[in-house]
Image 1: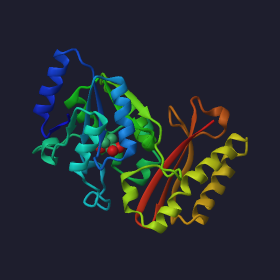
Image 2: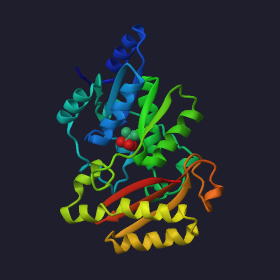
Image 3: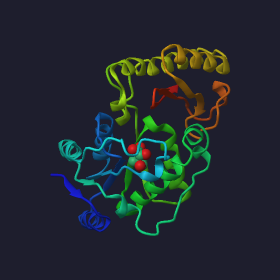
Length: 283
Ligand code: PAF
């Protein structure tokens, strides 16, 4: 049975009761409009904790004024059913006033992984993410929290945040969940027309083939330049970035040997007004 919780005090009461029963707790932070990608996060949470809280909060602080805060899909009823079907215990869906009360004036800025790529394309985005994630972690005080690799840079920002602020939580991640054509699942896919969906499905193909060319030892700068042209040829209107980064410290990878951790190929593209991101490991 999933309980809908709207306020922080009630969330804390539930968590305190679970703690009294010696139960471990996992948090799955989301913005709602749950799809199979989110449900995979819930599965990981369930495998790692006895109690699972899913938060659904469309965080205004991470949207720039020109972005889609107002249109962002909201579907509380079906989110409750989805969390229930997957065995989550609480759906925490606060309103904006509960999270950003009167006089709220704190912003958390994460350096390191919080710089470049998404931060350049969406100024203020990671400040909004880091601030709300820190708040959710403090409100729920879970043992673990689960984030998707779909937002790979966000995952590294969250890891940096909890490390730097000594927040006692284990950050778990879940590989990108894709549809049958390899398109990474995203709530924003709902904005795509039929024709745009066809084009969107080419993003993972170009990423995979670009990654293979890099693995085969071709010069990275040349492969990336070719990959960008190919994305435009495939019908994307704009390539925000196509870059190879270290999967742990997020430094730019110039040669495969230079990356300490596994390398990640990351892309952001535009199709009309819809912005899509995706990434893949490069071995
Ligand atoms: O990835 C998301 O859905 C959001 O950025 C998050 C982590 C829930 C913070 O609002």
